Image (cartoon, rainbow, N blue to C red; front, side):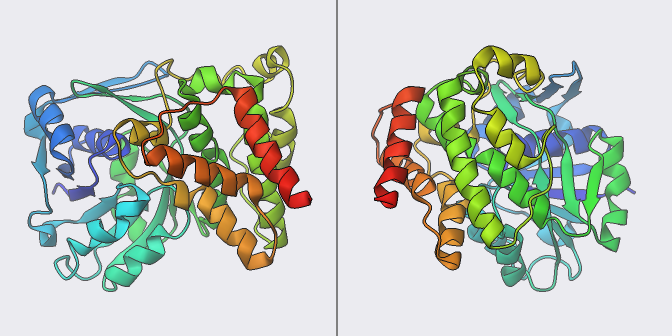
Length: 342
């Protein structure tokens, strides 16, 4: 019997994951914005990846809704909205899911699963993480533009749907404690505001040493406060996070030799934060750099670099169209750090 999956958030990640599940035979209902729903209703789905994979899903293989319809029939709920929309998305199904329904947060940041648990106390809420970048190219085309799969907090209930994810080409990496993975992904996502402020595609931005130096400053500060808080991030990159900070600063030719695969990103791929700014939407900056700022306040440690990045994104959210060269952004961040040192 087919399982019914309710995807709360028909964005790039939600559609890519849900589309592959639909192709594998699951009954998938996408809940999202009219713009995306109209696109995939007209064109269906073409799901591709940087390894050459391609999956076509016709519109009759999935359902579409602007608001959750009959959530009590769902066997699994995937929350893939941006972090600012977590509470609103889950309130829309509060009191309507069957008790014990698994709800998996496939979102950036730390603590979205906690918000969901408070709103859906009778559900089995699990933290999850998408470890790759997905690009919406329009006309139903969604492309996995970087390496990485799916991680989920381990629980016996995962056995209900793990085989379906494997059949869809999305094997779940199960972790007894997902927090180290979430903190490690947050370290990588600290590049999102840098990419958004650069105005450049990810591959072009990360290939530029000055932008990488900005990321090194941001990650170094984050690792310092995480160390004070005794948080140990998992290793998601070829080298440990502390060494990666040092390698980000090497000259461009050396970086290309060491991390050529990292640069094997779709040439059009941008961070989700860049997409949000382009569409005039609220970003996830409070759940990325803002998380580091909050952690620094908890342990009594200043975080001027992440605080300044947060401020610059807030300015951009307010409509400032300025984009920063790598050298200019690096000067902004080093000046913020110097001001704190006095």
